[in-house]
Image (cartoon, rainbow, N blue to C red; front, top):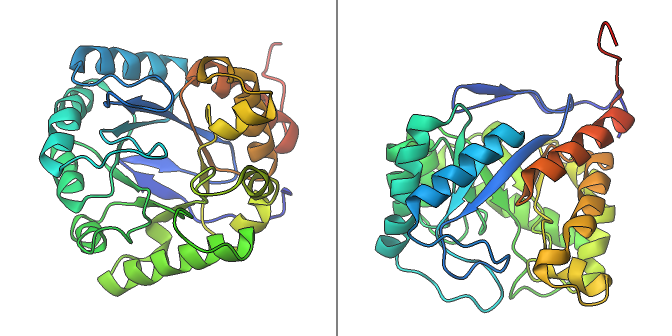
Length: 287
């Protein structure tokens, strides 16, 4: 990434203006599930979810992502009404308490609609609008931005960059056919979603290439992923902090715009330091 690189235009999310290329934004993860791969699922404990989100905001989160269905390998799909029971009380409570945008992590249009009505202002869809035919029309109706992820699970592998770009192009096609402009979309390459470990690492190395190819802001979620544990000799989830930090720093160097993380305090510091190196830094007056 260079200082002369053309950046995507700013995007308003939940009343906040996000200026891409100036710094890396941090998205905190709130899992309202009993079976999160990261061991942080909160189930129906609304108070605990709210406390976690408020703490993340204090630690530097720019957005909070609330999800009610695990996407771990081998996960059991959750009916929409159950997913709503998990996330809606949390979204409603956070809409009253938080001063940053709330994202709803769901692939179901009915859940997304209910969450938007409850106060969410961003949809994070791990199927890239390809899992529910009603999702793109919902985005058009509400005029809200969305994260479209490429999900490699169940797809033949031809090449990391080619496969991710093909997935994103299909998401763009579905969005634009429904009346959602591409300028309202954030892309996510789906790190560790269906990739062999070697290809997941290649994806991280080539983030900058992917971002430049589509000219959209890029979100990456590497936090506590299994490939980190594998590379570091089989580390359990709770010992993947340093490995996550390495992936976040590299993602920033490759031009990532948003990093989606569990450990907000630590990763916000990593992102801030990496930003100072990559994007430049000025000493505050009086120091």
